[in-house]
Length: 231
Image (cartoon, rainbow, N blue to C red; front, side, top):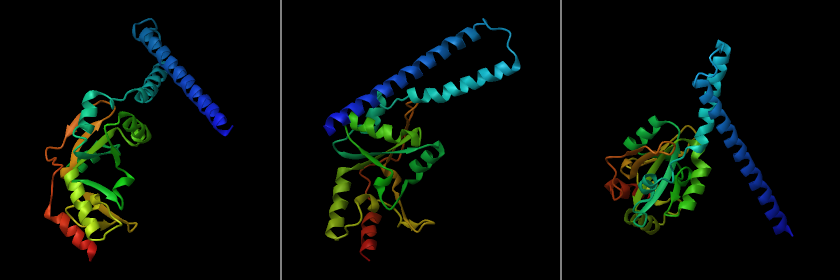
């Protein structure tokens, strides 16, 4: 009985969401038709107040239209994020400011304590990618793409296990400098920039590649990090 009630609730919610999308699309179409009529000169006598109101409507449409603009599933975007999936561990991270994305490409990816707090692992499963994207896309238009070779990941996972270090994952090791504490006394790590493949704007589809990208990068500092953890 509980299963049937749950299914009914899901159906009602989905039906409501479909109706909502239909109404929003209808609203958008009506606005476009009205805009075309206005710009074609049918309405020539408009006051300054009417003009300002018209501009506000355009701004509202711009904000609304972002919901319908998403290039995530375009072939070029998917290829950039997921290519070489069998040999790599791929992750995505969302940022709002393009200045921050440039900094990550140049300097590496900072994370507090656990890499997985803000980086999502992704695979060739498009449905899984879409679900994760929908849960995070409102954090920003820019998707940072992080790729680490399985060989590197497996090697340092083994070294951590051999050293009996259980509270960290290999991502904590792949830093050129030891972690530092932030204002909250949390440890801040900085994944080496070589593992940053680049980023993509999921609204426009624009892709920026990191010229220094090297998923096989192996620094002598990585083993030193394990020695520091032992101490």
